[in-house]
Image (cartoon, rainbow, N blue to C red):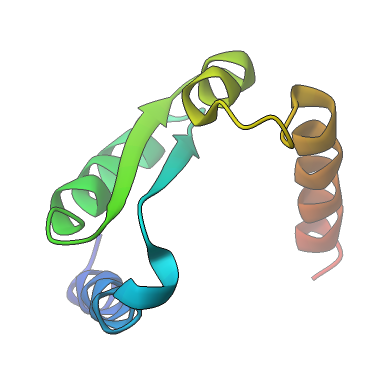
Length: 92
């Protein structure tokens, strides 16, 4: 990651620090499939220490859904949303 990328990630975390009242205590699963994504996710997790968000890194959808443990959340819904995001990214 270059200097601009680190600055961007830092700005992202600063934004969240200003929104703590909205965030409350949340779990966020970071789903990765490549080594570079694991590194960036680990950095994000380190930067989030002061936030009321629990970031964890996963390589499978099933384990990430189990971590979130939300009755309104299931693997099928998440898979559909991920597919929509992939299609949108492919069209850009």
